[in-house]
Amino acid sequence: MLVTDLVISVHAAPSTAAAPPSTRSLLALTYAQAALALGHTLKHVFFYQAGVLHAQLDQDQQLTPVAAEWVRLSQKHGFPLIVCSTVIENDYQLEATHLHSAYELGGLTEFSMAVAQAERVVQF
Image 1 (cartoon, helix red, strand yellow):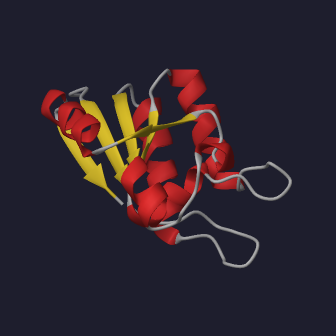
Image 2 (cartoon, rainbow, N blue to C red):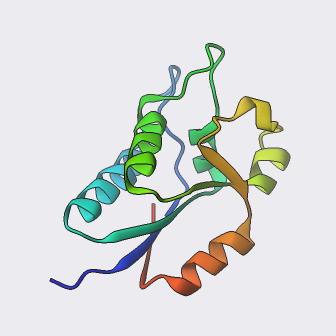
């Protein structure tokens, strides 16, 4: 089996109390778990568009279940979770205090650099 370096880009929102789980959000997480189980390396996960909401804390300072699972997976395998700072600020008017500390603010520059070093990019 050929082992590859992957970058995943998540554009779908996570589930919330008001909305059912996004199929694409759950699929991205399941794909990442399966790829890691097969020995692939996940270099970077970039959250863009509605995907940035994975980093948002609710009023009880909690993450949605799928967002919390991304944090566990990231901590176990040592890859960064990057949320687009421009989307966070301009589209959702969120500040860093509204975000979980495991999610880092970044931009398309960080994403482009990760993509340039990866063998595969998968977008959800």
